Amino acid sequence: FQPDTIWIGVDAWSNQYPSNMEDFMSGFPVDAHPGYLGITPYQPNDDHLNFLSTLQEAQRRDGKIPWPELPHYAAAQMIDSIQALVTALVATPSKDRRNGTAVMSHLLDLDFDGVGGRVRFTPSGDREDPQYSLLNFRRVNGGGASWVDIGKTGSEIGSTEIDMNEICFAEVGCGLGTAPSDSYPVPDPQLALWIPIVIGVIAVLLVGATFSYIRVARKKKQLDSQMTEMQKKIEAVKNIDNDLDNINQVVDDAKKRQASLIMKRAALQGTPSTWIDSPDTLVPVTPEDEEYWSVFEKMRVTIPNVHISKLWRVQNKSLWSYYSFHKDRLEMNDIQPNERRVWHGTSSLDPSIVYADKMDGFMMQFAAQGLWGRGIYFADKASYSKHYSHTPVKSQTSDRPAPKKAELEMFLSRLLVGETLFVTIGFAYA
Image (cartoon, rainbow, N blue to C red; front, side, top):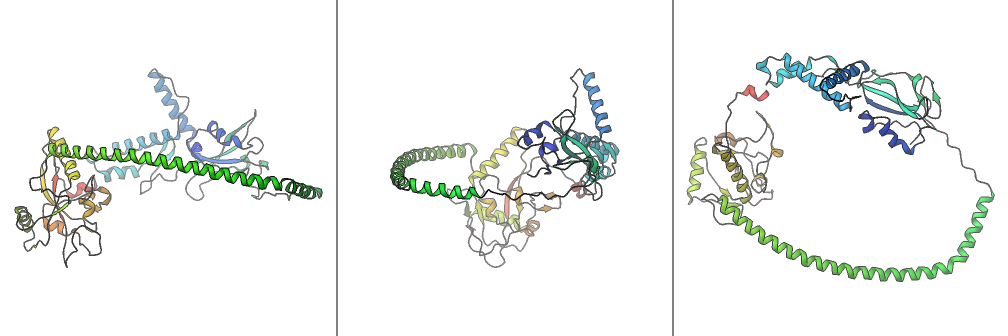
């Protein structure tokens, strides 16, 4: 680093200088070259000290040991945040305190002096013009070096207030009034004339004296290296064979254990009566099956001219175990599962992402922004989910047959509703 390198780091942000910073700068000649510049979140002395004094009085009143100082800048941020939220909630009528828009409007009207500086918010909810203290690491009276406050700055152009006379620059000194040049002259190295001559003579002598020794040593080293590599390869092959034997045994034991656990879980949870013994996740349902006409009649309620070209039953044992677990959990907590059969369209997302998953099935990372916010939506009416149905394409990789023209795909799902809450559209923005 150049002697006047600007340092901005986590230690400066936590306002714990100079002790932590001295550890970082232990390799730099700070006493010989002061002048490092730093930045730390701004804390106005009066407001900071007033809050600290009030806190110390409360700690003494409660019989606790008073804090000599606030531990971190994060504490000041937390205090200002709590004060801003409480002030906004007090200003909001009690009937509107669950309305996020109403509370936000009072937050945007706030303007007060906090522990961490002036507290105001922009229309987007960010801290308006946050302030930062500018520091100069330099020698102090009594020896050593320390950070000294030389001004402050904000995030807006023209908000910087700095006293250039208070800055001590590396190599140059203090009280200049203006910043010195940032160039550092580097003198050209000058060698005595005899040095290259002596180096050449020594090199020739060394080459002549050691040539034969190097040749013999090189051959011996090559032979030793070849023997060592051969021994390493033999040992590595033995170790690999032993590891393979151990892994094969572990895999066999794990497969037996897995099969046993799957059978036990299936016996405890059961599976739907319509499921058949099949290794496939998607099982075709034909017009000869009663389930086919049950789905057809439910869809025809809101889509009278519907035609089912293909119908599959999803037999995913992992998702069924996940579903059964949450159904049992509701019942153990005296909550009716309120199980329903509802429709869901995946839009541009391939349905195989859902039915082939082994963990969750419907996943929030694929959910889009809807009328009630970002979430996974289901509908009682097939006609509603039809607008969000998936249009399969022949180029997509899937275990489903290639689609015919004008085919649409969507799910008829089991849904655990549990307790319900009916709200109006306006509630979506509360």
